[in-house]
Image (cartoon, rainbow, N blue to C red; front, side):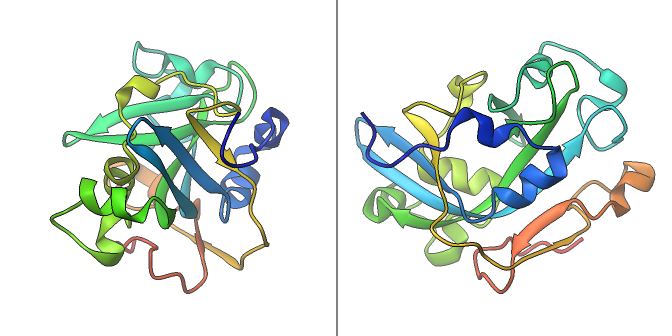
Length: 198
């Protein structure tokens, strides 16, 4: 039994760019012993490993870290960057290593718990980046390989269709032509969209 309705597994069975856009507005929910916390997804980035120099799985590179990217869509791919745990959703088709990075969320539930976890910062700074949102929602590396169609970590459907824009991804300057791909999606005008601009 979950506190929110759960996005079904077949929701993730979309081409990666389509899924990256479709995730905007969905609610990322994490139920923990401390209580639930949730954030509405407002920014994502798509990574299409077979052809994308910015992806960890570029040219079908399969390592212990990227192994889950070869799984069916809807699994969680976690990795660390500068000690921050980053949450990605495996996408595409099985054996084609693709994923969508959840880059920013707008808190919608568990606000006191989020404040407790992110006590040194307030407002949009709590969740306007991929490492920030995982800290705020209590998501760690133990969710590597988790399937998002069941608790304690899952997505709940959006209640309306937001206006979505796209542009180049952030922080991938060493990835050749891939740095120009317009594969970052974000809700128009939402203040929780990350402060970084490509």
